[in-house]
Image (cartoon, rainbow over all chains, first blue to last red; front, side):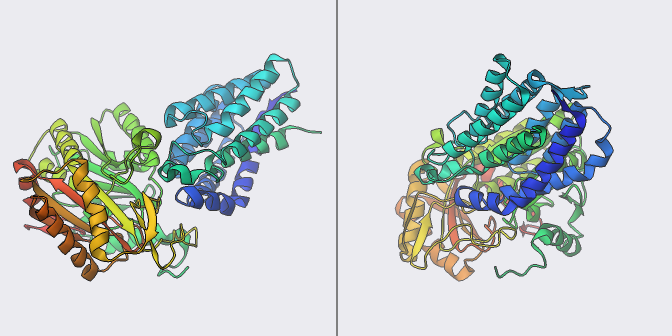
Length: 211
Length: 333
């Protein structure tokens, strides 16, 4: 089983819809510990991505993901723009010319994406950021990949790991981003960046796993 | 939400349209990507200054584009850093061949977007230097946070570096002067009320009628502590004492005292605050030889005040006094 180019397009389109649906929720999470713009920024970025979709529908996975990344970098702003932009650009670099991805290839792409986010934002696991959802998701994929698990199970595992990672940000004290200025007061709130990261990976599992 | 707007999504665009109509003698406004450039740009053989940040802090930065200050400003969405695409387009529009200085406030998004823009501009052969302003003493634990925020000193750095660029200094020299302003400038702010981001529709935080937030950031990020409301003289003391201790400013130092409204505090209250800040500065033996009082770096409609001190030397004094002509600051011409 593999993820086809068309399935990647469906994933991106579904992400746009999921982020639009969750716009107010992400804004609310961000208002608690940040500056109340994350939901609106992601929604604006993915609406811009939607405008580009018709132009890349017949391209390879790498071109699709790089276009998503460049569009986010040039439309989102904030911290989310460079971080999610880098995420998709790095995933795109690993999938240049590919019309489909197997488990190992998706693991490599997501691994590069998360490494890119870490390099750009200089956050580590435990800082209460996107990395707390993304890193466990990559680890879950790697474990499944090593154990020769199925792609379907690996995608479900990585979404579940991202969910646990996202929920684990609730008691954390933020050390990066605007939430870090709250110090101890940032504890008790779920990180909006970890939440949007989870939504992207949950959506991947939902659209790519066919029961 | 009660605001003088048409639709939350149109706030930034319509504001820029207003700026374009109001200040066509001084600036030109470029849309998509959005940036405000000085009307004469690019000015040949002058270092160009580019800044930017989220909207909602007006007049910073767009109001500081013009002679003796910025060559371009990139406005993001409200409280959201602009994008590298905006910064790159602005950089190309204003580069006069002597390089471009980015003046960046220390916020995660601003720093990352300006980093990406600088990488892109250098790939196109434009000389770029960045200076990050981080003057907010309210942030005590820089090690476990994103570091001190860039606040009031940014306004002073843009004025002073703009004058240095007009004098014909090299990019490295203008960047050094910018670092000097950041080195000698310190700020702290407070809020009496919250503010409402238009697309959020409700106040960013809740501050009861009888409480205030000391050490607030310019996006409603909380500060050192929340406490019961005090008289102006006590509030000003709580702001200026940590500022004076931080550098520290010493007896005999010549300073610029900047008292800034967060947007919703009227001038009558700013002068009450200035009076006390000036008196405390004198008690410490500081010589207040320049000042700035008004709304320069705001946080939408937030009521509150910030106090910035800048230690002046002969260069900084001369550059501060030099002529400036922008929509938000004008003297000497």
